[in-house]
Amino acid sequence: MTIKDEKLYIVMVGLPSQGKSTIAYRLQDIFKKNDIPTMIYNNGELRRRYAPTETWMSEFYNPENTEAVDLRKHFALMNIQRAKAYLRNRGMVAILDATNVSRSRRQLIEEHLQDHPILYIECINNDEDIVDLSIRHKVRSPEFGSLTQEQAVAEFKKRIDYYRLIYNPLHVERNYILMDSLHNRIVNEQIEDQLPLYSRIRDCLVTDVVKSLYLIRHTESMYNVEDRIGGDPDLTERGREQARALGRFFRKKRLAYIFTSEKKRTIQTAEAIRAEQEDCEIVPLREFNEINAGICEGMTYDEIQRFKPDIHSARKANKYTYAYPGGEGYATMKERIKIGIKKAFFLNQKPDNIMIIGHRAVNRMILSHFLYRREDDVPYIYVPQDKVYHIVATQDRKVFELKKYA
Ligand code: F6P
Image 1: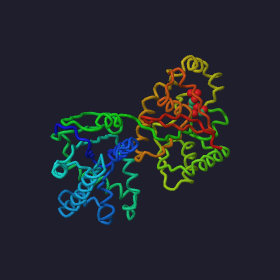
Image 2 (image 1 turned 120 degrees about the horizontal axis):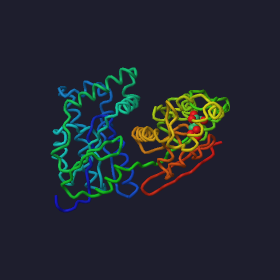
Image 3 (image 1 turned 60 degrees about the vertical axis):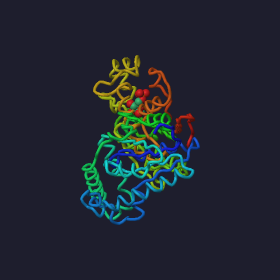
Image 4 (image 1 turned 120 degrees about the vertical axis):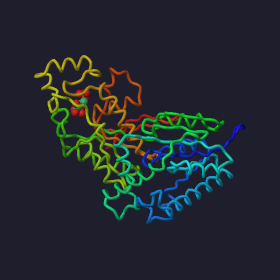
């Protein structure tokens, strides 16, 4: 193709739980905001609509099960035809969201879609924790209703193994991008045609777009009252009441996930918020655990000053780079916090509200990820327990608000 086409097919490629749909939604969202009519065609949705009873079983994905192979091909063709009709009419971009891991499936697509260029986006995510969390989320769908969670997870993993058998990475295709979908990094690309919207797509793929992030510090804990650091204390009665107030504050905002640390005080805060939501999952991530104060865990600031004066003064002299003996410092937390943020964005598939409930030091690091702050100032960012940070950071909008919730 030499003439620059105006319309485009985007074909997602990758095993289940690699972040394909998240990327498809992100692209659709950015195009729609720019008045570029875009539709996503998801094979899984057709399968669940037209063959809901038999398609949760891993056997349905066995490449030797010819009947099932035909049925899956049939659904793929339905979406191919729909995508084609859409671009023939008012559509500008049609996204085919399915595994499309075999060369033969991609040949089928290419045979039918010759009217506009095709850009393949292959997603790879090797983080086992995330794949696991994402599978656990997927098996909450009604199609697995007859199984226990463990059985459903096992079925889903077998399904992935069947897809692995027929996996053919992109190579001969004319236009493709290979994405590390957890880190929003382009690992490889090959573009032979002049593609419309290419630089916008590329930009969208590598940008952390935050449509609406609510960042909260857990409410009052037993240790807060005593001015103790670290540990794993419960909330106080006042903290529980604050958490219920948060629940009421967020009642009308849909939250698919609440990301917390593994500590009780963040999970208890999240539980009170979830109680006011319809379908919301709490996901504890170790990356959001509070700064590990090493040998000072459980001490008060006053005790540290009296009994460990060297630690007190060294930390005071350089709070950002100082690491507690046997523990961490702000600087050493940076990488894990970044990974936590990536995980949260990866799992939050549709671009709706994200909530993170963290701790004082953790939230400072998260804030510094979105806000420019000199390193020396990061350990002093204001992180109150009675207010909520609301952050929006898209290509055309930046919002940073601190709101009182009660
Ligand atoms: O006091 C609560 C707390 O979250 C502690 O667990 C943690 O060590 C501290 O805040 C972090 O704040 P700073 O770096 O200012 O000591």
